[in-house]
Image (cartoon, rainbow over the protein chains, first blue to last red):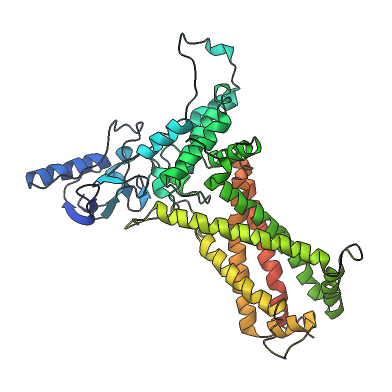
Length: 247
Length: 227
């Protein structure tokens, strides 16, 4: 496959960036998207150019590090992470536009790399369960209904990649928050901190500069883990309940 | 966050929009019912309009009930517009660098039109009040205090009917997304089945409202409703 790549280049956080066009020949359809960028970077190295900076870690679709806006879709045209996207999803001669996540809460560090520290701070604000350290308690001492356990597990698959924010026309992180609030709110261990959790997480979210949710649904369409939109309903319900409880 | 208040969050603003939006929905349905009285003829239509002003008398003063409703609607409008403006500005600040290429995969057209659609409805509302309530501006036939005659005179003009039809399309699109979105904001759509029901409900109500309101202007233009 021969490709024309339009890629955002930005030397550092403070400098202005721009789109640059590259030609890449002989791309195998079996390559992953990141392997394709690796090949491009080898080519750039040989030419003495600065290689394109992009994030990746596990390359197995489970860590959430990689994330690129590919032809206007977060993580590209398939429901998966960028690292698990393969070049067979594209056609020979195609022009591919590659941009970093665009959110003022995720500042660009370099080229396609963004700082998603805002997500860490939202989790620090309430996305946890406080427990005393010591020997682990007997797991069966706190029964959890099967349906709740399954649903909690399904939404706990969120890898915090930020695709929901990148895809959202409002730049909202509601799907991310909703996944965590639903996950912990379904479990008995999550109950004592339930009200504080939702209030503190949403307040931190707003403080970071993310937008408000208008229930468009672009987030769930972009989510590589297919987190459903109902987690945002749960998030809203938990916040409404917290208001009722005087928080 | 230290001292975080639930009522100061973006979700609280969304709750304000959802509740005020449902108040509007109740009003719009009642308004549509009143409009359809036009098919019952001159006297039935005007009697309905007259009764609205006498509602609750003698317990309430003349137009008392009407003003209670109006104040509720004005308060809802202030809340709805205020929250929308704050959230719109937040969304604009959340992404100051735009994408070169962006698809809104998974989004309905109605969901992307909420803000400008809302502005369209607001502009229409100003004209509509001048037309039928505050100014009673009759685009043909001179000033009149007869609600039925004013209605027929207005919709006899094809371009007036067109303005109203466009406004009703905007309202329909707004309700199509707005109703389900409000249900989601209130936390009523916690499962895929409930979400689907809310979306269908939103679409059906939007269709009923936009078609129901459009029937009267179209019937006047077609000569079915006449003076």
